[in-house]
Length: 378
View (cartoon, rainbow, N blue to C red):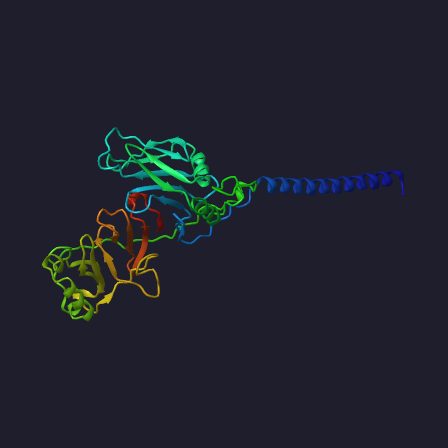
């Protein structure tokens, strides 16, 4: 090989080695970048898997809704109207909230004020916007965890105002621990009860809510909740006849309601008995003119319609709103409406679908806006 050719060969070999080196370097650099990206990209947050549930713990109860929000309630017992509520949204960034209320003694006088005492330790509170002189409602401002820690380990909580109410704390710790478990908080710094060093990032985030689309509104000419006459086909049903007998009083028997759902479907409500503060209706879907009547299927998580295999068609204090396409029910545990079941169903064009349900089993003066929401949609 001539010297010139030798120099060309050496140069080519050097270029090849350099090219290999660049390739290896590029591969290593790319792998390093990928590793860095992998380290910097957080893992997808776990999504909470939860079902609506209510459970009792001695003198306390707890409810978790289908959206992952949970509530714990303590009561004075009886009908004295004293209560405390701890609410916690799902997810690692949620902060607990403490709200409470009571009914002052009839002869108690003085300016509106409210606070808490737990086993002799006082906690300041603000009056909630929903508070009234005859039914004060307080809320713990700022960080509520000191109150929660105290009541979880305490024996008696006293609501202080112009008069006072004692609330037993037996069962409070168990109710809070159940919420930790339901929301996936156990052994994390976010837990209400069993805190630990497990990263807060492992706490599941809220699940997506079911989506329910209401059918378009339709003209209601000839329909409504006043002076309606039941169609013959509907009146001929045995169960309808029995309901009308139960509602023989004119003030009740005349409370037939109706609505047009679409060109092929009508909605009829038959009064079926009443009490001092509750009026029951049975709801039916029919064709035009009341033909081919069939019970409306109203499924919920509580009450007679809780079993989807045995849907109910009754409401208590029910009404239909043609604008929002919703059918609502408010079964009151007593006349002032501080306990019972509230439900709302939306007409989709095919059926009524549950879109909201809140329940309060204890008649203790809790306003309905503060009840736990067992079910909701978007």
